Length: 342
Image 1 (cartoon, helix red, strand yellow):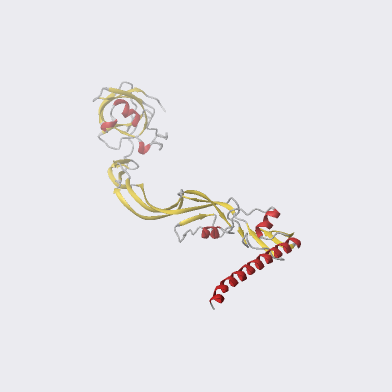
Image 2: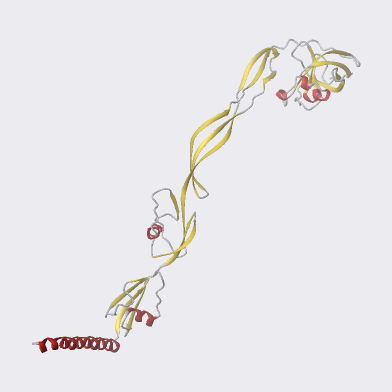
C-alpha cells in the first residue's frame, strides 16, 4: 500500500511531461505548416486595399514583411500578436493631426474623427453653451485643420453720449421783425448708456441695451424773435463830409451772417460795415468808441438799428476793432468821411 502511494506522484509527473511535449510538437508542426503554405490576407490601410500572400505567422510579422508601419494613435483591427488566418481581413485606421486652439494656448491632437464635433467628443470637451467653435461643429475636418474654441465673455460697457439742447423761441415787441437776438446760449447735456456685450475672443457677438443715466441735463437755448413792424423809411438825408454826432451804438453778427441786407448785399460779419437809419448806402463813416478811444472806418450797407435810442449798428468785426463787442452797446461818435452817390 505504501509503495502504491509513492509511485503515484512519479506517474503524474511523467504524464505532465508527455502533455507538454505533445503541445510543443503540435506548435512546431503548425509553425512548419504555416511556413510551407502561404495564406491570402487582405489589408485595408485607411482605404488603400491590398491582397497579399504571406507565410508570416503573426500580424506583426505580416506588417513588417509588407513594410507597413503602425504609428502612435493608429488603430488596428487585430492585435500585433494575433496569429494569421486564411482570408483574414486586417483594417488600419490612420490618425491625423489637428490643432486645437483655446484662450489658454494651442496643442496638437491626433484624431480619427470625420467632423469637428466628433473630434471634440474624443477630447471630452463640454460645450453646453457659452462657447464659439470655428469651424462649425458639423463641418468636416482634414489633416492640419485649426479648430478654435473660444469661451463667451459677457461684460457691461458704459459709453457717454451728448443730449442735444432745444431752442426756445420768444417774441420781442421791441425788436424789428426779422431780427433775432440770443437771450441764452444752449449747452448739450451728458448721459451714460449701459450695454451688456458678449465677446468671443476679440469678436463682438451681441450687444444689448440695458439703460441710461443722465449725468448732466441740457440747457436750452432761448432766442427772441422781433415782431416790431419797421416804420416807414424817412427821406434820405444827404450827409456832408465832416458831419458828426454822438449816440449809442450796438452790433450784430452770427444771426444775420450770410443773409441779405436792406441794400441787397449779403451780410458778412467779418467785414467793416454798419447799419444806419438814413445815411446813404456806401457812405463811409469813422466810428470812435468813447470808452476806449479806438476808431474804425465802416461802410453803410444796411438799415438799422431797430431800437430808436441807438444811432448805428456795427458789424461784429467793426465792434471787435474798437473794443465794443464785449460790452454789447456803448457810446460812440460817428463822423462822415465820404459819401458815395448811388
